[in-house]
Amino acid sequence: DAGVIQSPRHEVTEMGQEVTLRCKPISGHDYLFWYRQTMMRGLELLIYFNNNVPIDDSGMPEDRFSAKMPNASFSTLKIQPSEPRDSAVYFCASSPMTGVDTGELFFGEGSRLTVL
Amino acid sequence: SQQGEEDPQALSIQEGENATMNCSYKTSINNLQWYRQNSGRGLVHLILIRSNEREKHSGRLRVTLDTSKKSSSLLITASRAADTASYFCATDAWGGGNKLTFGTGTQLKVEL
Image 1: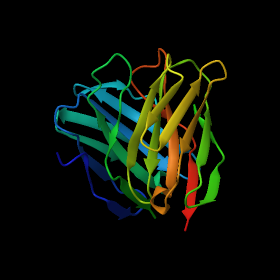
Image 2: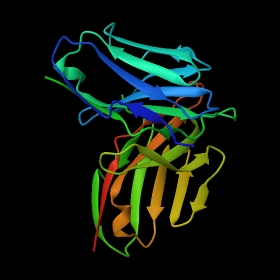
Image 3: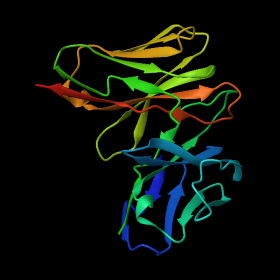
Image 4: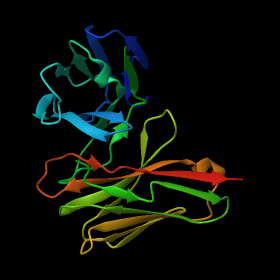
């Protein structure tokens, strides 16, 4: 398996522009997570899905952020409009979650976003 | 806020030495996991220890868990330059849903 695939790997944009980050989870994984990593705040969970349904979006910073999972093999994280403080590395992770507790997460390589 | 706090924040050792990293957390957990992150890369799962386990081994890794103190430690024995990375603990909080909360991480540098 190719692992979790994220695109783009790097994005530089100007304040006010729309940004769309994409993720293809590992086939057969029921859970998908979006995390954001910054030096100041570390790794923060933004939202996670189970079987394409958003379960917990309490980590989404504000209404400028939205995430969708239209099918089991694709998810997007959108920021509109973007601001400089959104600059971070955004990670997507998936998990098969076969047990009653949270199992191993498989991370993509991340999308590094710079908002000027 | 961070569920887990790693200690130390940074650690520099010589190749062949052992490296110990500690993680403290705040709430009751189902399990605790350790991940590794090489610079510019995604996180990679190392080991998972459940709340009813006290110690676990995987190759050169040894993880302990003390639920009474809400703490865990990761020991890497006979370290190698290739072990240079950041190491994170992550907790699956009891009743917190199927999600992990990550700590602040320890940056390990192994010098030749």
